[in-house]
Image (tube, rainbow, N blue to C red; front, side, top):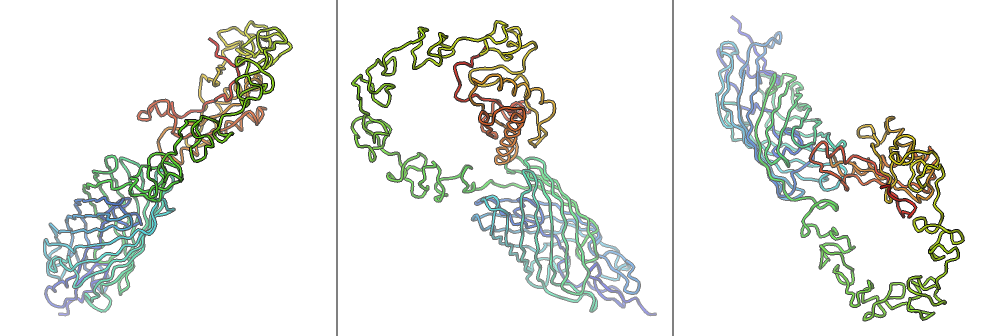
Length: 589
């Protein structure tokens, strides 16, 4: 009787049998390698290393279904599974010894392995447990977003040691080498895209006949992950491209990770679906585990917290002298004093090395010497409004004159020939609409209205104070954008009208503010765009460009705590600040 001749494809079979059960040739069945550093991805090496002097240790449980099948060569039908289910555990470790070098390792162990009856598969049963192939790796950071570069770019050099169990199919016959290149980049404040390409060089051997081999293969992977604190996700896939006579295979994976702030403690879980028939490609697999890590040293980036001694090329106090050359790195100084504050013996604000009168207080415009007094009235010429005509200090060195007799000296009187009041710098008070409320207090100076409405027929949404325009509502924008919502048009129209009707308001700064959620740079840019959008709106309503200025402060000036939703809502705002405030603008009591 002629027996079946079996072909063990790279997609899934082992051995050639003619009589009885053939032994399974030893090789490393497992294709899964973890990323011990796992900063942004549990599986792929996408260029990002752990922060300098940080480490991560994890324990991972792993279950895979049907990773090794036997097929009949004649019609490619599946005869059974040499390995139907495998349960294993992994210990992974990684440490960053420098900002450009991370060292990692993983040690797997198979706790349980089952398969179909040898009568069905025509192959002897494999071992039920055993040590897996240990992997060691060195990862070199070429570029790093964490340290200010545009992308993450890294070189991964890994080695597999032949220390597993031949019986349990957890080792190759010799050493394996796993070089990879990874790249990644943040997409906005919450997402990251990464990719890697690499290879695994291992001992080549034929498993059943000339078309059934294991050996070298290329790898490629792509992943999308979230970068927020707390619960985050990652999605991706890996492809295995054999360089021997074997079929393609790959896996698609999805995972969830949850960590404490700075991810000091983390739990994670992942599932993957396999495609193809290569040995080690399961129908599906799941894994989960816990990890403990340390945050490491902060990056040397100006504007972020860092250790001064580790960052000699930066300038912590912003005085133009680098930390490595600054004798007083936390206190602004001058280069002449190696970064320490210059001396000012006479306390006039002119440093001694620039002061022509270092023992006598003076003024900068006179190189540190006192200014002259041409008229001899005891008032220096630079402070004397009439430097060649004596006058009292109370009148800034000029003779006291009051042409209109309103008690306000002419040099302080905006209307020197017309009696007025001090509040308007000597000009007469006006009530254009005759409602009994002076224009300077009136939110509607040309429309009569009661005091409780700030001089308007209806309650005004804007109140004029000495420092700002106080609005009773807020300016609303589309989430994350600088697009003004239509419900804010009425408020902005009211603001435009008041500015145009009060020419005594010299200039208005439109301030944009945000909460602290997200990247600082993005928040500052968003606040600037929103302030500029409001300015553009007011310009379209006829306000002069010279009277408006837009500034964005991001999260720098909160009015409430950013730890609560209500506080963050209050901090997302637009304010209208009067600069160079005139006495004509006063708060209505």
